[in-house]
Length: 406
Ligand code: PMT
Image 1 (cartoon, rainbow, N blue to C red):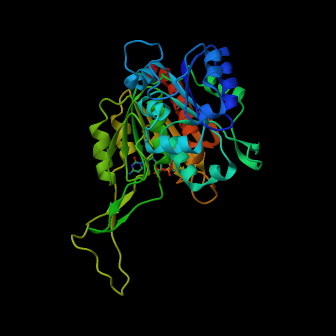
Image 2 (cartoon, rainbow, N blue to C red):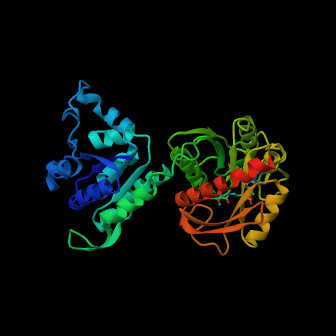
Image 3 (spheres, rainbow, N blue to C red):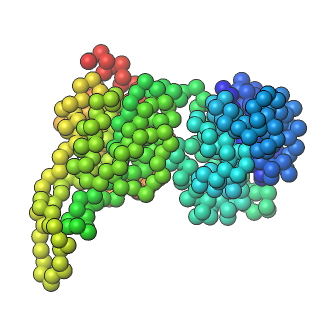
């Protein structure tokens, strides 16, 4: 693999020389980009000697190989010619720039132009790490599908002890290496994913909804896109950034979601229904705002269309993955959904009640996969983005069986 190694300005920059060496030893070629601050900690010559390549030190530092391309468009060429971007140390400043799309130096500009997998190894003071600004930047980057490695806890350069130490170079190299070759295995698939809640109007200004944040569905979309799939993401209203490389179709109600799914069913080869669709909508939505009255009043609801069941009827040779959000009897209810909705796989998760830190709104989840052959696979507590990859690993295992059946 051709790896771009971005080195940020932190004391851990010296460890990135070890990282460059470890990546080279694993058989990769490494092109180093140093920020101006990084060059205050380590000389570019160190990296040049280790990688046998000129180190990129600035936006206008000249073309790497001295050809006629002007240095002004060098970042585009560099981003196109490499397979992975690893940034270590990823300082708080770099995380903020990446999260918000600022492009005022070579590394942040390459980041915007780069379309492959991104690995970030943060390193900073523990207070900077736990600051809400850093954590929300990190959340955006995670949802964009980037791999965050570390940081570790321990003594920090500033004399305090806590979270913020850059993960050791060998561990970063091993993490990157393990994920290098896997990730174009969905490049022949069109994956249709539903995510988030639906909102069902009560009157012109009010609605009912549920607690789905869309994090699970967006993590699935990011994972599928990173693995080469064409991704169509039908999403209810959420407050998440759009994952890179997906076709986003925003919807509001269950009915709109149904129409969007049906409109995009044709090209889909895999359908993953992680949205929390309202089961009921108001039978007759009043044209005017409901007036406040002293008296108790009732509203009549009708069932919404069951999108999963309808897709199950029309799915043909497509692989259909449903979700089951349950507060009890997870496996039994998931199995029942698999049968009644004609799914190939149901991803069950516990929500509310006894579930803590999983399901709705959480960054992490813990799921059980129930498949048509009766197989049950437990995927333990992990970030939703990681689980998304494990779920697609499992979906791909079902492919041959499906083709035999079809
Ligand atoms: O969005 P997050 O905050 O990250 O939370 C993730 C999640 C908890 C929402 C997600 O992991 C999850 O469980 N999604 C399914 C939620 C749900 O509505 O489950 P259900 O058991 O009520 O529905 C079963 C299946 O039928 C789901 O695939 C659902 O998309 C589908 N369905 C339900 C009703 C309906 N009218 N049409 C449908 O297609």
